Image (spheres, rainbow, N blue to C red):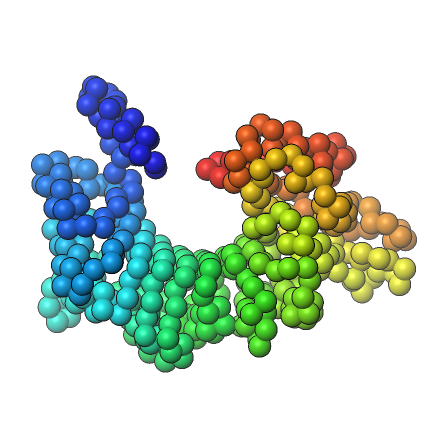
Length: 398
């Protein structure tokens, strides 16, 4: 919600009782706290109207630069605000957390004594951590111990000076979704995730690796991903690569060979850069879904299309219509054709039907959504017109 949207909602609240009832759930759905004055103001609002608490779905807590005393006051203020009004957000977003803040936060994340101690954040199901720094990996683990019902974990620019997991969690973490963004030690995070989930690892069916670089593909960075292939139903990949480096080609024979993900239903590819040299990884990755099966003949170029994937999503940042006219998109479209065809070329007899039913483009760039839809539909129109797949173009919020 930007500043203009907030002003419009505040105007609605002041206009009439009907508009007030409509605007309040939107206005207080996400609460952002970064100063003690903001916490004091929110504390006062909830004192005056306790009914607003039930609208809070997400709390974003951003720790600004400052001294240890200021950080400690902020952490205490956050937990006081949560506990005083029985505020139970399902999503908590922590920005700029450090070891010092974690210790201050950890001391105030629970209330009660002895066995009666209950985390203030007991109902948090989704935790997001952005730009957080820990000296030891155990500091990161200790934060997660405060969230007994955690199911969805998102990490972006989370670093550890000593990245050696100790696997000392008090309880198994029942994660269902893991999202790893920029500047994270993916190898350490994935291996830690396998260990701390224990027998509950089968619940982890959604994995998003949003910004993989060459360094992540080297030295077995994705080796733990192989243990999650059989259960992954929703996979997101974004690769920051120039051309097609050797580590990527090696990964296609191992952890990024998508034909080995037997249960995958939704594949999402984040095309972070639409320049030709940054798109060359897409086509070979898609062709791993068009595997050579045991029944395919030796002359079959593509083999059998994936029998599990039903939806393919592209996140794109379109600035103009010409970005889709480059030759690399011809290769991508050929791979999409192979994935969606019902009759495979060069295959004798009846071919198996491909399971791909929908290709979705999520337009995140400044190009108008109507022009983006027209451009993409024209480029992939033959797939849509042949009734093999449905091509959709939607904005991010859809």
